[in-house]
Length: 158
Image (cartoon, rainbow, N blue to C red):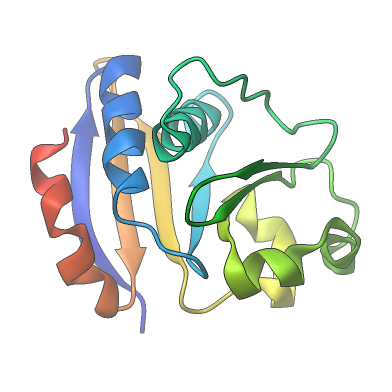
C-alpha cells in the first residue's frame, strides 16, 4: 500500500539538486522512481543531479530525454535509465524502450509516470513535485512502507 512517507521543502534549484544527490546514495538496482509534477517543477533537474551523483561526475552531460524518450547511463553498480514519457502515445509503447530491462536490474527514473498505465511498478517510489506560493517547491515522497527506513537520511537533505 502506498503512503506518504515525507514531504520536503525545496527552496530553489540547489535544494532540488541536493535531494537528487542524496537519493543517488540510497537507490539500488531494480529500484524505480516515478517523478510526478507539472512542467517546471524540477523533475529533470532532480534526475540530472541524481544521475551525476550516481556516476560520480558533476560534469556528466545529462540531456533531457524529452525527444529520445530514454537515456541510459552506466554506473559502477547499476545502469541508470532516465525516461521522459511526456510524448509517449500509448502505455504499451514503453516496451519498445526497454523498460522491462530497466525494471529488472537498472535504476529507473521516470518522468510523466501516469503515461505508463498498467506498466507502472507497484513497488516504486513516487516523488510528487509541486510549486509553492513563495516560488519554491515541495517534494512529497510516497511508496510502500519498505521505503521508509531507506529514505530516513533524506530528512536532512532539504
